[in-house]
Amino acid sequence: MGGRRRYLELDSRNELERHSAEREILSTFIQGTAADITKEAMVYLADQLPQVAKDANAKLVLQVHDELVIEVPRFNPTWMEIPQSSSCTVG
Picture 1 (tube, rainbow, N blue to C red):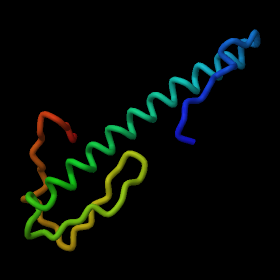
Picture 2 (tube, rainbow, N blue to C red; picture 1 turned 45 degrees about the horizontal axis):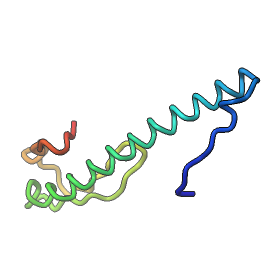
Picture 3 (tube, helix red, strand yellow; picture 1 turned 90 degrees about the horizontal axis):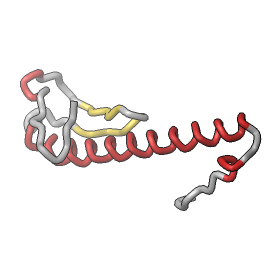
């Protein structure tokens, strides 16, 4: 929890164990990057949502994997496009 993991299988003579460790390392890196991007999008959206959807009363409810769930009491397509900043691209 919260530390570095040592992949001792990388030095294994067993090819299957070695390839499994390599896949695990790559997957961990990709998932960590995706989590960082989602977190940045959440922070950006939480900052922009009150300004863009003033009268829609929209709320950021939760995150499920790579999706952000926003609760909107009534549908108003005029605020659907949130302006993008140079620090975070939401697409």
